[in-house]
Image 1 (spheres, helix red, strand yellow):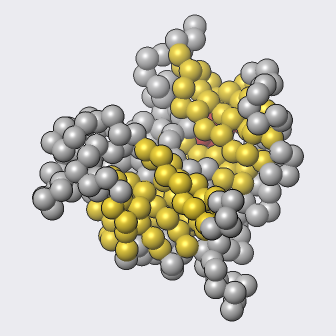
Image 2 (spheres, one colour; image 1 turned 90 degrees about the vertical axis):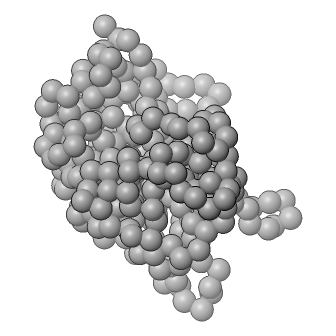
Length: 282
């Protein structure tokens, strides 16, 4: 019987003006065992929702056995320029199989889904952004890789159908060896000299550094927003948001103010307390 629902993530389909929301039903206390992937949609900006629909059968290729079922982890998901809806999740193992990232996508507004031909590959919670010409970048926690303590980058050049193996993003050090969820957002380039100009990528994650510059290695504190202008291959600069204070999972959005000025919006978990408060690794 159902014990809980959770792990929800939504995408706004700009073509059909529909919010497509997915979440999991858990029948076991272990979140990667005995769960179902469910979906609801809203055509009135969340005022009302469709009936619950079980879409687990579409992602069976992601479910690699007992204890290895995929859950829709935290992070940024998106609709690409082609109109494709791209979701992803992760399993709970530390090797593949049974653990890793799995990506599924829809080309019909969420009616049906296909699993990426890459199957399940090494990784955990991740965020996805679109660059240009169908290229996508994924940024994920690195604690399952040999470069544990740094972020991991993945690439797709066919709208998410296939993904590269993960590579180390050495320039971003995680707050703890287990890492943390981080948000990823692409903002269109203002360089009008070239239609192929890469968007600026913004990435947010706690840094783990205290106000005195000491890195604890065990605390999710001091949120930073990093910026990349080379398609996510490096993030040379950052803006500190709340140095010394608690920071956990985060989300980013880009908007235009009434004045016409662009605005970057960030929300984050700040409930872990002030500097020195430890947070569990997962």
